[in-house]
Length: 326
Image 1 (cartoon, helix red, strand yellow):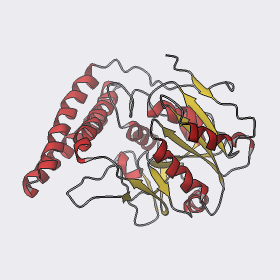
Image 2 (cartoon, rainbow, N blue to C red):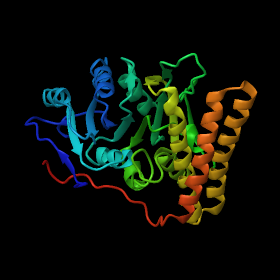
Image 3 (tube, helix red, strand yellow):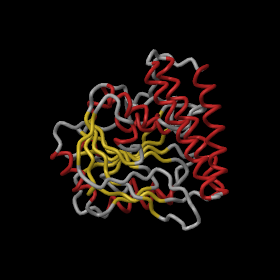
């Protein structure tokens, strides 16, 4: 199967041809209903100061989605035959031409004033190259459910520092970057993240870490809010968190193997502490779910570390955007 991205030529102006404050990039695969909810949230914005690029790696493009994007001149649609969220994110930012690129996952829904608040935050923080919005969990159940990829912000501030923990400047589910920063850092490492063969997470943490080590500043914007749907079942949480831990361990090993020994060990220690805290929480709460998740995290830590130490890392790899419309 070809890994070259392909774009549909819809015969009208795309976001590259309209004036916008930023470009929203949504990466998706085989989740048309969730994507539809995200697009509805974007369509309901009280200020349309953005363009939208969808990078879809689905096995087949859902007919309703195709009709929707073909009828909306503000949306550019890229059907990519490759795999991996990092690859899709790289295609997205390279297909944009605005100063800012904002990533939202296909399972988040923005509040109606989200775009306006995001634009305002970008203007208020001219020295920041990353802006992070508030991301509360939506649909959390009362059965000891563990939330996935929620990031709460209670006050507006700027954060920086070479040794700031990388998750303190946001998660990939809802994050904005200056396009020049993405270009300077080479985008996302496609060996990391959902869809990657060995390390299916932490592409966002890897980017955050490299960004902070280069002296970057991130702004936290509590009023730019999206809601992250918690759709996974209890049975899916264990394997999902194993993937998180496996990716984190690989990301830590990447930097250790690359010569950043202290940084790599420092990063790896957070993965171990995360597992230990989950195990302790399971014992304290007498929670079978937390015990199961802890066991999955332990396996992810071991497998990710072993693979990461043996993996031939070399230079970071990232996809190029298509040169022309297919």
